[in-house]
Length: 459
Image (spheres, rainbow, N blue to C red):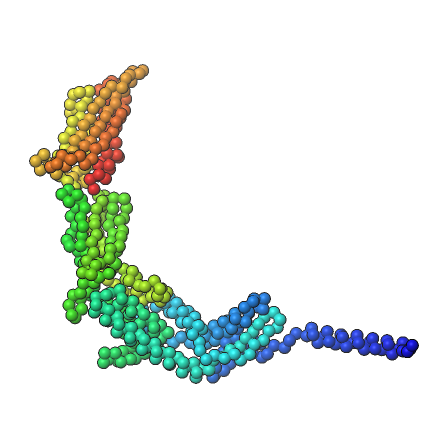
């Protein structure tokens, strides 16, 4: 057996323990962050982008890269020149903010030529450092602009060809696409040769968009909508859309028109689309008799021609500057000429006063009805009232009234409306006054119920 002195064993154990403590101390020391993490680099030759993401995310490297490229893109200024398209648009400040945000987002998505410089993590956060040569970016941007200009001019030319075919929808779509092709450069004044002229391309494209709508007109046949008894208080109108250009007037097909007029049950709204001859038909009926202004409003809403797939945030400010004169067609509602035949009785005897005929006549006259003799009447109105005894109790007498109202075509005698009110109760100290009380109460029913029902049937 080999004997090892106890002192040597103890010294060995002490030495091992000391080494372990040194290793643990070195392992627990925080890693040293590179300089670009603690202080953002500055360069005259490169755009810099620093991005970070927590390592608990499965996609922390991808997220950090995206943040770095967004950071890099924010260093690339969006140029806005005083004579650029942005200065010609309405509500420019709010649009500038939308435009700048959109362009920066697109810039980060379309960046080319960037390179990864370094990456680092401290166990919790992942950091990444990208850069892009300013010279390389300028070269790429110039080439991209050249392609954008070529595309925009081609789309503009095709828009003109579509308008030559009287295809407004396609012409608008192509012109908007031409403008969108130049979106990154709306803040710049890019001079190009077009039709033998040196023009600012974006402004010229925008002027072309406005020109598509500038000479459009909407007309109606007839130009006044008359609703009367002989046409059943309804009328079909022919709407026509035309555009005037140097060649002459052109009828425009497939154009959506919004129509609106006051209806008996609220505003009547709809959309009509023109045919190949630029014509659209719309029916006006059941117009509100009590409307303060009776008219058919027709308008072309430019946004109705826009392809929903296009970037609406950019399209709407462009379209906001477009105006197309609408059309207002007066609606003349002519109530019928009526002959009233009233037969109101008081227990079998003619009622000479206090009946409902006067209430009916005044209510309808106030709405424009004309009361005429039977030979001039378009419609006949029959009012019949009959009273009957209801009994007596404690000195009070009760009478009941049955009222019937019939509306006929004066020529054909066809019944167009039939209504009435039964068992209208009157109570007084004697039977005659009870019957007159029933007629008085029925007058209120005529105003509240029978007249509205009659109007609904007529109009």
